[in-house]
Amino acid sequence: MSTEQNKAIAMKLATDGWGTVSGWSKIWDELVAEEVVRHFCSTNQPIVGLEANKKFEASLFEGFPEIKQTITAIVAEADKVVYFHSLKGMHSGTFMDIPPTGKWAKTTGFTMLRIAHSQVEEMWYETNLLELMQQLGVA
Image 1: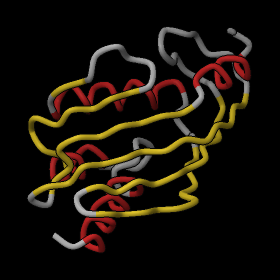
Image 2: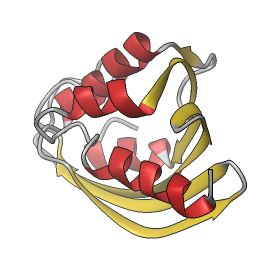
Image 3: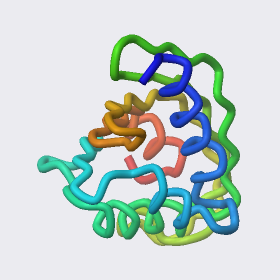
């Protein structure tokens, strides 16, 4: 696949597959491999498998059900795509075992995807969780 095709897959996942969008789970079924491996900044072990990743994704949006994402840049080379983003939302539900605080939080980060056969086979997500927790008043 070309880097432009890979960028299109990444952008579709980042927009239509965003957890606040109706039907996001179906986009994951289409674009994410059954045995996907996700490396998340706050987990010691990767999250393996499509269903486990969809469950994890849904849990993140329980804490910030109306969070907004702005893609600020996207870069692709070979089978990898990286997009940088800013996130802003109110913590109105449970997030990583933290009860709702009602506070607004904003953070920046990036997602890197490895794409093969038109599907995401591996993903990495990084953000400053300490900064986020400080904004919520729990760190």
